[in-house]
Image (cartoon, rainbow, N blue to C red; front, side):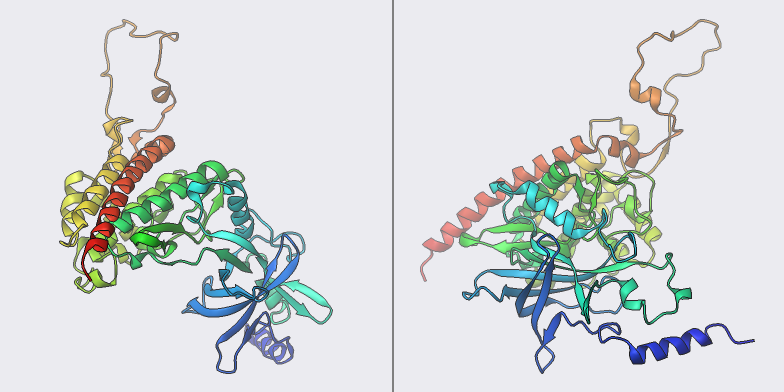
Length: 465
């Protein structure tokens, strides 16, 4: 009997010898210089059904491993722009997609180009939010020309000739190679000069995040240091910019409960997300992630200069959030956020003792209380640990009726059949009110931070050279 897999292996090797150049991984839509640097990149506009070519100025981010989305970003200019002033960021990634029709149609509710276009169009004209979110210029699934045929670049078309039909199963994961040109040109969040700039950037980002959730019905679902950028402005001001909607979902079209896979980066993921909870996802998951981002930066340093004064997260309570087990990371977060005292002692007390960090510590403390100890619902649901529901009315052995079917009953109590007090479920029921409270706090602190930035700038201008 022939050993399993021998025939498939031989078929794979033979097909690789005769396949098209793009199938082993060469990308004909990106041209290189002789030294291997990127020269120019084609971006297909699936809305206008035409291809735009961009000249690469420099790579911003290169993929460091051969698995996952293999995301790469390049700072570019349109080859038709003779001035070279209209810069864009071209993002190239292999994102999850849904098979449709014959397997080549990758338009689905998770199509990031469709999501980005929806955000762009619905926020158009809003001056307050302008420049605070990655804005789509155009984009689509990469188009690969094979002779007289143009195909969408996805895992099915790439493997179609390489793998035998027995391995081309619908159960195999399906990814589409999407590329987008976006504005504005930004720098990483940790280029802030001081805490006040960080506060302004965080407020800008969560302001546009809230607008996108309310106006576009889209949840970002991956708030992290890497997806929070800044644009530096005149007079030492900054603008926060929210990017990377690869994990976003249009909640008007799909169930808001978790996807089979977790989304995000462990140190910043919400507890619901890490535990693959059946509690519906809301804006509060992203607000929880923001709290973790600010805690991490407050502990390890908000920029490279401050990071030099920090040794390692290992050994600190917050270091547990880097763990390789999502269950253990979630448990650590539950424990450290369960009570105000545990949060202060394990997290806030470990913030760096540097100028401005006391203001960041105070802000995070207020956000934490608004999130986990909000006064809009019963204290039985505060914190992060599920508790047994207390007996609100003790049993009475008498035959006397204490209420009638027509008696007024609190609707929440009447419909609540749970035997436990689940904090995250209760918060999800009050998500919009809590999110509004959190945004008010952050926007108020933003105004204070801007005033301090203004005074600092004026003082610098008055100083003798």
